[in-house]
Length: 339
Image 1 (cartoon, rainbow, N blue to C red):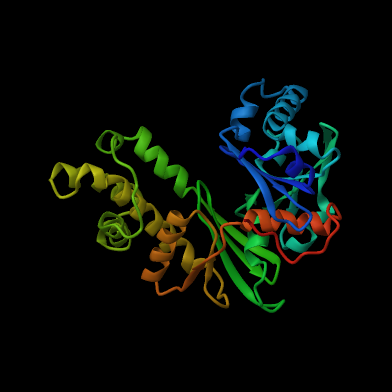
Image 2 (image 1 turned 180 degrees about the horizontal axis):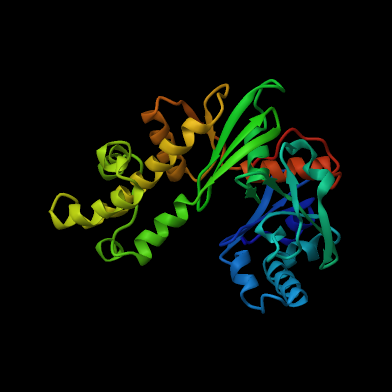
Protein backbone atom coordinates (compact mmCIF):
# COMPACT_ATOMS: atom_id res chain seq x y z
CA UNK A 1 0.00 0.00 0.00
CA UNK A 2 0.99 3.59 -0.49
CA UNK A 3 1.20 4.45 3.19
CA UNK A 4 -2.24 5.94 3.65
CA UNK A 5 -2.92 7.40 7.08
CA UNK A 6 -5.55 6.01 9.42
CA UNK A 7 -7.51 9.26 9.11
CA UNK A 8 -7.59 8.93 5.34
CA UNK A 9 -8.60 5.28 5.55
CA UNK A 10 -11.51 6.28 7.76
CA UNK A 11 -12.80 8.36 4.83
CA UNK A 12 -13.10 5.26 2.67
CA UNK A 13 -16.51 4.39 1.25
CA UNK A 14 -15.64 1.34 -0.85
CA UNK A 15 -12.86 -1.19 -1.30
CA UNK A 16 -12.75 -2.04 -5.01
CA UNK A 17 -10.87 -5.20 -5.98
CA UNK A 18 -9.72 -6.62 -9.29
CA UNK A 19 -8.46 -10.12 -8.44
CA UNK A 20 -7.11 -11.76 -11.55
CA UNK A 21 -5.29 -15.01 -12.26
CA UNK A 22 -1.82 -13.59 -11.66
CA UNK A 23 -2.34 -10.21 -9.97
CA UNK A 24 -4.27 -8.72 -7.07
CA UNK A 25 -5.20 -5.04 -7.31
CA UNK A 26 -7.30 -3.04 -4.86
CA UNK A 27 -8.33 0.58 -4.41
CA UNK A 28 -9.71 2.41 -1.41
CA UNK A 29 -12.31 4.87 -2.73
CA UNK A 30 -13.83 7.87 -0.99
CA UNK A 31 -17.56 8.76 -1.09
CA UNK A 32 -17.07 10.45 -4.48
CA UNK A 33 -15.31 7.47 -6.01
CA UNK A 34 -11.86 9.05 -5.85
CA UNK A 35 -8.85 6.85 -5.09
CA UNK A 36 -7.44 7.33 -1.59
CA UNK A 37 -4.99 4.45 -1.68
CA UNK A 38 -4.01 1.48 -3.81
CA UNK A 39 -2.59 -1.98 -3.35
CA UNK A 40 -1.05 -4.34 -5.91
CA UNK A 41 0.57 -7.72 -5.36
CA UNK A 42 1.34 -11.02 -7.06
CA UNK A 43 -1.24 -12.82 -4.93
CA UNK A 44 -3.29 -13.77 -7.98
CA UNK A 45 -6.13 -16.25 -7.66
CA UNK A 46 -4.00 -19.07 -9.07
CA UNK A 47 -1.25 -18.58 -6.50
CA UNK A 48 -3.75 -18.45 -3.62
CA UNK A 49 -5.74 -21.46 -4.85
CA UNK A 50 -2.58 -23.55 -5.23
CA UNK A 51 -1.87 -23.28 -1.48
CA UNK A 52 -4.66 -25.80 -0.76
CA UNK A 53 -5.91 -29.04 -2.28
CA UNK A 54 -8.12 -28.54 -5.38
CA UNK A 55 -11.16 -30.11 -3.70
CA UNK A 56 -10.76 -28.30 -0.37
CA UNK A 57 -13.45 -25.65 -0.81
CA UNK A 58 -13.38 -24.47 2.80
CA UNK A 59 -9.59 -24.33 2.86
CA UNK A 60 -9.56 -22.30 -0.34
CA UNK A 61 -12.07 -19.82 1.08
CA UNK A 62 -9.91 -19.44 4.18
CA UNK A 63 -6.80 -18.88 2.05
CA UNK A 64 -8.50 -16.19 -0.02
CA UNK A 65 -9.83 -14.45 3.08
CA UNK A 66 -6.35 -14.45 4.62
CA UNK A 67 -4.76 -13.09 1.44
CA UNK A 68 -7.37 -10.33 1.20
CA UNK A 69 -7.02 -9.29 4.83
CA UNK A 70 -3.23 -9.25 4.55
CA UNK A 71 -3.53 -6.63 1.80
CA UNK A 72 -6.63 -4.66 2.79
CA UNK A 73 -7.20 -5.43 6.46
CA UNK A 74 -5.99 -2.01 7.61
CA UNK A 75 -8.60 -0.32 5.40
CA UNK A 76 -11.34 -2.45 6.94
CA UNK A 77 -10.09 -1.74 10.45
CA UNK A 78 -10.06 2.03 9.86
CA UNK A 79 -13.54 2.08 8.32
CA UNK A 80 -15.54 -0.68 10.04
CA UNK A 81 -18.23 -2.19 7.84
CA UNK A 82 -16.92 -0.63 4.63
CA UNK A 83 -18.34 -2.58 1.65
CA UNK A 84 -16.05 -4.51 -0.68
CA UNK A 85 -16.74 -5.10 -4.37
CA UNK A 86 -14.56 -7.59 -6.25
CA UNK A 87 -14.35 -8.77 -9.84
CA UNK A 88 -12.16 -11.19 -11.75
CA UNK A 89 -11.10 -14.79 -11.16
CA UNK A 90 -11.90 -14.39 -7.47
CA UNK A 91 -15.43 -15.39 -8.54
CA UNK A 92 -14.40 -18.47 -10.54
CA UNK A 93 -14.86 -22.08 -9.50
CA UNK A 94 -11.28 -22.05 -8.14
CA UNK A 95 -11.60 -18.60 -6.55
CA UNK A 96 -12.87 -17.31 -3.24
CA UNK A 97 -16.55 -17.87 -3.93
CA UNK A 98 -18.12 -18.88 -7.23
CA UNK A 99 -20.16 -16.02 -8.69
CA UNK A 100 -21.49 -17.75 -11.81
CA UNK A 101 -22.11 -16.20 -15.22
CA UNK A 102 -24.72 -14.15 -17.02
CA UNK A 103 -25.59 -15.58 -20.43
CA UNK A 104 -25.46 -13.40 -23.52
CA UNK A 105 -26.97 -11.04 -24.40
CA UNK A 106 -26.02 -9.46 -21.06
CA UNK A 107 -26.79 -5.92 -19.92
CA UNK A 108 -23.76 -4.55 -18.08
CA UNK A 109 -26.03 -2.06 -16.38
CA UNK A 110 -27.64 -4.96 -14.50
CA UNK A 111 -24.51 -6.65 -13.15
CA UNK A 112 -25.38 -5.24 -9.72
CA UNK A 113 -28.51 -7.40 -9.61
CA UNK A 114 -26.46 -10.62 -9.65
CA UNK A 115 -23.73 -10.12 -7.06
CA UNK A 116 -22.88 -12.93 -4.64
CA UNK A 117 -21.77 -12.01 -1.13
CA UNK A 118 -19.82 -13.24 1.87
CA UNK A 119 -18.53 -11.76 5.12
CA UNK A 120 -14.91 -11.15 6.09
CA UNK A 121 -13.20 -8.85 8.58
CA UNK A 122 -16.47 -7.23 9.60
CA UNK A 123 -17.28 -6.21 6.02
CA UNK A 124 -19.48 -7.65 3.33
CA UNK A 125 -17.63 -8.73 0.18
CA UNK A 126 -19.66 -8.66 -3.04
CA UNK A 127 -18.40 -10.49 -6.14
CA UNK A 128 -19.38 -9.59 -9.69
CA UNK A 129 -20.44 -12.46 -11.99
CA UNK A 130 -18.77 -13.13 -15.32
CA UNK A 131 -20.35 -13.41 -18.76
CA UNK A 132 -20.87 -16.57 -20.80
CA UNK A 133 -21.47 -17.22 -24.48
CA UNK A 134 -23.15 -20.54 -25.16
CA UNK A 135 -23.67 -22.39 -28.41
CA UNK A 136 -21.26 -24.03 -30.83
CA UNK A 137 -18.24 -22.04 -29.60
CA UNK A 138 -18.64 -21.40 -25.87
CA UNK A 139 -16.64 -18.58 -24.35
CA UNK A 140 -16.35 -16.85 -20.97
CA UNK A 141 -15.35 -13.49 -19.52
CA UNK A 142 -14.58 -12.83 -15.88
CA UNK A 143 -13.32 -9.42 -14.82
CA UNK A 144 -13.31 -7.79 -18.23
CA UNK A 145 -17.03 -7.10 -18.00
CA UNK A 146 -16.27 -4.47 -15.35
CA UNK A 147 -13.47 -2.98 -17.47
CA UNK A 148 -15.84 -2.68 -20.43
CA UNK A 149 -18.43 -0.92 -18.30
CA UNK A 150 -15.81 1.53 -17.08
CA UNK A 151 -14.42 2.08 -20.59
CA UNK A 152 -17.90 3.01 -21.83
CA UNK A 153 -18.44 5.57 -19.08
CA UNK A 154 -18.84 9.07 -20.43
CA UNK A 155 -19.35 8.01 -24.04
CA UNK A 156 -22.28 9.62 -25.80
CA UNK A 157 -23.16 6.67 -28.02
CA UNK A 158 -26.85 5.98 -28.44
CA UNK A 159 -28.48 3.04 -26.71
CA UNK A 160 -28.73 1.07 -29.95
CA UNK A 161 -25.25 1.84 -31.27
CA UNK A 162 -22.89 -1.04 -31.91
CA UNK A 163 -19.38 -0.82 -30.53
CA UNK A 164 -16.34 -3.06 -30.20
CA UNK A 165 -14.17 -2.96 -27.08
CA UNK A 166 -10.81 -4.73 -27.20
CA UNK A 167 -9.12 -5.76 -23.95
CA UNK A 168 -5.63 -7.05 -24.76
CA UNK A 169 -3.81 -9.11 -22.19
CA UNK A 170 -2.95 -12.68 -21.28
CA UNK A 171 -6.26 -13.66 -22.85
CA UNK A 172 -7.40 -10.85 -25.15
CA UNK A 173 -11.13 -10.18 -25.31
CA UNK A 174 -12.95 -8.64 -28.28
CA UNK A 175 -16.34 -7.56 -26.96
CA UNK A 176 -19.23 -6.51 -29.18
CA UNK A 177 -21.95 -4.37 -27.65
CA UNK A 178 -25.16 -2.64 -28.54
CA UNK A 179 -25.25 0.20 -26.07
CA UNK A 180 -24.34 -1.44 -22.73
CA UNK A 181 -25.59 -4.88 -23.80
CA UNK A 182 -22.85 -7.38 -24.62
CA UNK A 183 -24.02 -9.35 -27.65
CA UNK A 184 -20.87 -11.38 -28.34
CA UNK A 185 -17.17 -11.70 -27.55
CA UNK A 186 -14.10 -13.60 -28.71
CA UNK A 187 -11.11 -14.70 -26.61
CA UNK A 188 -7.57 -15.04 -27.98
CA UNK A 189 -4.74 -16.57 -25.89
CA UNK A 190 -2.19 -14.20 -27.45
CA UNK A 191 -0.51 -12.98 -24.26
CA UNK A 192 -0.20 -16.49 -22.87
CA UNK A 193 1.28 -17.76 -26.14
CA UNK A 194 3.78 -14.89 -26.09
CA UNK A 195 5.07 -15.93 -22.67
CA UNK A 196 5.08 -19.64 -23.51
CA UNK A 197 7.07 -19.09 -26.69
CA UNK A 198 9.63 -16.87 -24.95
CA UNK A 199 9.92 -19.03 -21.84
CA UNK A 200 9.40 -22.64 -22.95
CA UNK A 201 10.04 -22.99 -26.68
CA UNK A 202 13.23 -23.44 -28.70
CA UNK A 203 13.08 -19.70 -29.36
CA UNK A 204 13.43 -18.93 -25.64
CA UNK A 205 17.22 -19.39 -25.66
CA UNK A 206 17.53 -16.71 -28.35
CA UNK A 207 15.69 -14.08 -26.33
CA UNK A 208 16.85 -14.88 -22.81
CA UNK A 209 18.29 -11.42 -22.19
CA UNK A 210 15.86 -9.38 -24.26
CA UNK A 211 12.62 -7.63 -23.33
CA UNK A 212 9.76 -6.31 -25.46
CA UNK A 213 10.24 -2.62 -26.09
CA UNK A 214 7.32 -0.97 -27.84
CA UNK A 215 4.93 -0.68 -30.75
CA UNK A 216 7.20 1.86 -32.46
CA UNK A 217 10.15 -0.51 -32.74
CA UNK A 218 11.12 -1.90 -36.17
CA UNK A 219 11.08 -5.51 -34.96
CA UNK A 220 7.44 -5.25 -33.88
CA UNK A 221 6.47 -3.67 -37.20
CA UNK A 222 8.39 -6.42 -38.98
CA UNK A 223 6.41 -9.05 -37.07
CA UNK A 224 3.12 -7.35 -37.97
CA UNK A 225 4.09 -7.30 -41.63
CA UNK A 226 5.15 -10.95 -41.56
CA UNK A 227 1.88 -11.99 -39.92
CA UNK A 228 -0.18 -10.66 -42.83
CA UNK A 229 2.27 -11.50 -45.62
CA UNK A 230 3.54 -14.71 -47.23
CA UNK A 231 5.06 -15.87 -43.93
CA UNK A 232 1.77 -15.49 -42.09
CA UNK A 233 -0.16 -17.30 -44.79
CA UNK A 234 1.81 -20.44 -43.96
CA UNK A 235 0.11 -20.42 -40.56
CA UNK A 236 1.13 -19.13 -37.15
CA UNK A 237 3.12 -22.25 -36.22
CA UNK A 238 5.33 -21.84 -39.29
CA UNK A 239 5.61 -18.08 -38.86
CA UNK A 240 6.88 -18.41 -35.29
CA UNK A 241 9.78 -20.60 -36.38
CA UNK A 242 11.10 -17.75 -38.53
CA UNK A 243 12.14 -16.01 -35.30
CA UNK A 244 14.77 -18.72 -34.94
CA UNK A 245 15.87 -18.95 -38.55
CA UNK A 246 16.13 -15.18 -38.98
CA UNK A 247 18.51 -15.04 -36.02
CA UNK A 248 20.51 -17.96 -37.39
CA UNK A 249 20.78 -16.13 -40.72
CA UNK A 250 21.94 -12.94 -39.00
CA UNK A 251 18.89 -10.98 -40.16
CA UNK A 252 17.30 -10.55 -36.72
CA UNK A 253 19.18 -9.67 -33.54
CA UNK A 254 18.41 -11.75 -30.42
CA UNK A 255 17.34 -8.58 -28.61
CA UNK A 256 14.69 -8.03 -31.30
CA UNK A 257 13.11 -11.47 -30.93
CA UNK A 258 10.46 -10.53 -28.30
CA UNK A 259 9.19 -7.58 -30.35
CA UNK A 260 9.19 -9.68 -33.51
CA UNK A 261 7.22 -12.46 -31.77
CA UNK A 262 4.83 -9.87 -30.34
CA UNK A 263 4.25 -8.50 -33.83
CA UNK A 264 3.59 -11.96 -35.23
CA UNK A 265 1.10 -12.87 -32.49
CA UNK A 266 -0.74 -9.55 -32.32
CA UNK A 267 -0.82 -9.32 -36.11
CA UNK A 268 -2.19 -12.84 -36.44
CA UNK A 269 -4.85 -12.21 -33.79
CA UNK A 270 -6.07 -8.98 -35.37
CA UNK A 271 -6.03 -10.44 -38.90
CA UNK A 272 -8.19 -13.40 -37.87
CA UNK A 273 -10.59 -11.84 -35.35
CA UNK A 274 -11.31 -8.51 -37.02
CA UNK A 275 -13.06 -9.82 -40.17
CA UNK A 276 -15.51 -11.83 -38.07
CA UNK A 277 -16.73 -8.87 -36.05
CA UNK A 278 -20.02 -7.19 -36.95
CA UNK A 279 -19.93 -3.70 -38.34
CA UNK A 280 -19.58 -1.32 -35.42
CA UNK A 281 -20.06 2.41 -35.09
CA UNK A 282 -16.99 4.43 -34.26
CA UNK A 283 -13.44 3.25 -33.63
CA UNK A 284 -12.44 0.17 -31.68
CA UNK A 285 -12.11 1.11 -28.01
CA UNK A 286 -8.87 -0.44 -26.69
CA UNK A 287 -8.68 -0.91 -22.94
CA UNK A 288 -5.32 -2.07 -21.64
CA UNK A 289 -1.84 -1.17 -20.42
CA UNK A 290 -0.36 1.68 -22.50
CA UNK A 291 2.35 -0.26 -24.35
CA UNK A 292 0.06 -3.19 -25.11
CA UNK A 293 -2.79 -0.91 -26.19
CA UNK A 294 -0.43 0.93 -28.53
CA UNK A 295 0.58 -2.34 -30.16
CA UNK A 296 -3.03 -3.18 -30.96
CA UNK A 297 -3.79 0.33 -32.19
CA UNK A 298 -0.84 -0.03 -34.57
CA UNK A 299 -2.02 -3.45 -35.73
CA UNK A 300 -5.58 -2.20 -36.29
CA UNK A 301 -4.27 0.71 -38.33
CA UNK A 302 -2.67 -1.76 -40.76
CA UNK A 303 -6.21 -2.97 -41.46
CA UNK A 304 -7.50 0.61 -41.79
CA UNK A 305 -9.54 0.24 -38.61
CA UNK A 306 -9.47 3.35 -36.38
CA UNK A 307 -9.00 2.84 -32.66
CA UNK A 308 -8.85 4.92 -29.49
CA UNK A 309 -7.39 4.02 -26.10
CA UNK A 310 -9.70 4.00 -23.06
CA UNK A 311 -8.68 5.72 -19.80
CA UNK A 312 -6.40 3.70 -17.55
CA UNK A 313 -8.84 3.80 -14.63
CA UNK A 314 -11.55 1.85 -16.48
CA UNK A 315 -11.62 -0.96 -13.90
CA UNK A 316 -12.02 1.47 -11.00
CA UNK A 317 -14.72 3.36 -12.87
CA UNK A 318 -16.56 0.14 -13.69
CA UNK A 319 -16.44 -1.15 -10.12
CA UNK A 320 -17.68 2.20 -8.83
CA UNK A 321 -20.59 2.10 -11.31
CA UNK A 322 -21.59 -1.39 -10.16
CA UNK A 323 -21.31 -0.35 -6.51
CA UNK A 324 -23.59 2.62 -7.12
CA UNK A 325 -26.13 0.48 -8.96
CA UNK A 326 -26.07 -2.05 -6.11
CA UNK A 327 -26.61 0.65 -3.48
CA UNK A 328 -23.28 -0.04 -1.81
CA UNK A 329 -22.36 3.65 -1.93
CA UNK A 330 -24.67 6.58 -1.39
CA UNK A 331 -23.56 9.73 -3.19
CA UNK A 332 -24.48 9.78 -6.89
CA UNK A 333 -21.38 10.57 -8.98
CA UNK A 334 -20.92 10.12 -12.72
CA UNK A 335 -17.59 8.28 -12.62
CA UNK A 336 -14.74 7.37 -10.34
CA UNK A 337 -11.55 9.30 -10.91
CA UNK A 338 -7.98 8.66 -9.88
CA UNK A 339 -5.86 11.39 -8.36
